[in-house]
Length: 396
Image: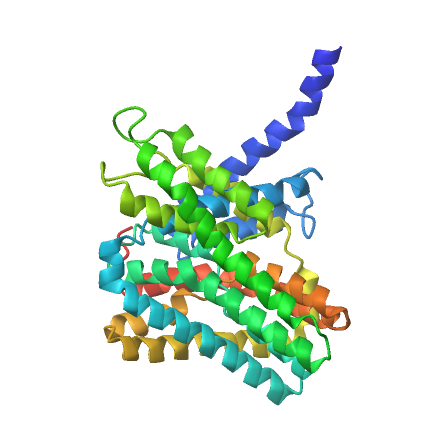
């Protein structure tokens, strides 16, 4: 009876996982034959089977989402980090740094100015301006791999999304500190210290774990690294980062960057895990779609519309300014602003921090960020795919 009971308990879990993977397969096939990226299709599929429409997913899937988010973004961070090699930094480092900084500053400035003109409270405008530059590295990374994009534009794009969240955290912390000072809160020093720890602690953790990983990678089996070896280090890095309350995406990105630079005894230190992130991403994006709330769109209103338009304008203007200053070719700065439109988890996390710091603004900040994130999650991957094709680097 015990075995039968255990089998009955396991059946819904296995059926759910199997169904989700088949939906992912269908989204992948459909994405190759339509203008819609598979990320957007998975989000739409999740919205369809989620509680907002058909409500087909069991309740226990809500408990999976935080863990799957950590798993997926940890591997994305590592694989993006591997692109930050010394030769790429020498070739693109100055350009990526200028483009990313310009994009972050102008996206924030445009949102701040637009909301102030709309009459939004100063503290709320500052907080939303701090959230605006955040991007969605997972969505961008998957679009790049889906269409097999490669080249100068693609390397620049991945470099930008790899460091955007670091800049975004610093800027958000600064604007949160200013907002708290305006509101008369004395906790601004603590906020800055916490932000510094989240940023520099992540860099230190990734660099520290990179030394043994770079040495061991490929030496255990005297060839290419094993999946257990690669996954062990990336998940250890993510787990320690969460425990230490530092950015696990940035820590894993740093780990990937250092290993790709110092594991010089073989050419492909990440071959073992290239491609295996897709099953995790299927689960991640479909459950993300299931967690979207359509009523958030109706609650956004004019503030959300201004946020969407000014963020998009700021990203475009930032790319134009940064591209021209850095000497990038026109095909890069004309399309990079469109390619970085996706916005997801980091923005929601910053919104929660802002709501905790300003409970009186929670009903303004959370619906605005949640509703606009729905829009950017759906149209952002489409825009990124279009930009990569216009830049001439899509090969599928």
